[in-house]
Image (cartoon, rainbow, N blue to C red; front, side, top):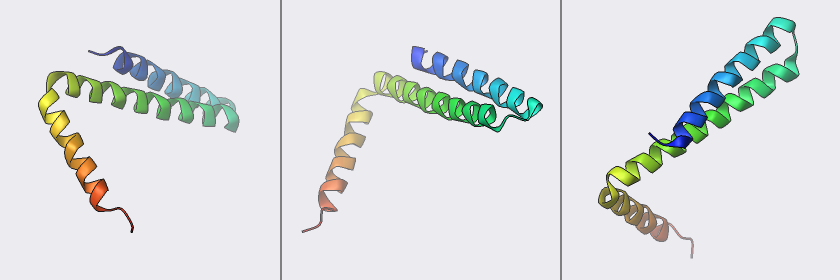
Length: 78
């Protein structure tokens, strides 16, 4: 398991607590920060999952990257 996944899960949990506290005390700013922390945690966790996938299946990941590059190259506007 990647450290990004662990840190992301922790940030999501902390954001949920922060959002709950903001909701409990009626502070919309704390609620918004909690939601932002949850979103950052989700992104960081997703990055960790992607890193794990690339580490486990490098040839498949490289083939996908080449395919995406080819598609983007075909979509260029002349």
